[in-house]
Picture 1 (cartoon, helix red, strand yellow):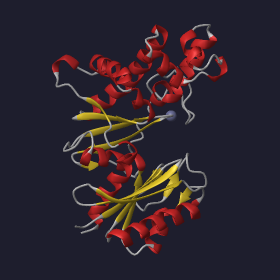
Picture 2: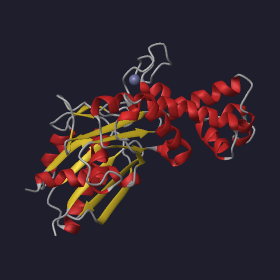
Picture 3: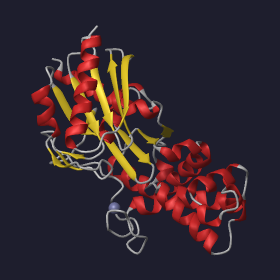
Length: 313
Ligand SMILES: [Zn+2]
């Protein structure tokens, strides 16, 4: 059985899996994320070398949270300090005895979910990762869509409200600015500042200054009407951007991953309802299912291992 190695490097941890041809994980490594180019490369090399020695893996792929070009150079990685115009692919190819690819973390997660997760067997998949921001991966016609320079699929950064709140990227009213975890944090603070949100404040232990989106989720879970109304507003914002992307791409399904998915159907049910409303001709076309991701934190590493197979010949 031929194994390949998939590595996922995010802002907090490195997860590396040796995966066999049936998608089974046969060995793994996990370490906290390093900072800086040399340390990140050293950790990735150590993980791949260790797993290759242990399992006989013949190729590897690294998914990393940043903008990655086809050579594997990381142009910009906002959550991994010290990576700017960093030739990660070249450094890995120089040091490793097996072939290795570098790709964006959301791209590899989309491949993982399409191969063995919530979108198994599907050819047209939109992956939406909703955490602090919104990221995404596109599998179109069975292949990852990366654009001309490798930077495609940045689905959080298109304008849905030109007069809306500022986005972390410096533009106004991007989807991410109205429909992410940080958007829910802001809505929670605004509710409390306006004198409302008593159940939300209670969920924060009575500390008005500590209120964030997690307390909205808690209060909504307990049935609080104000918290549920905020989640409805967030869900409508999520559905608004999702509908635009579905109008453009017409995927078979949308897979939602990231921290906000932990709310489950409390969030996804209103997203599904509002998607049907915002989608062009929603009543006259097949439903586009919105499913929670199935592979959790393993999605990126599993997908990277799947992509590495194309190097295995
Ligand atoms: Zn933006």
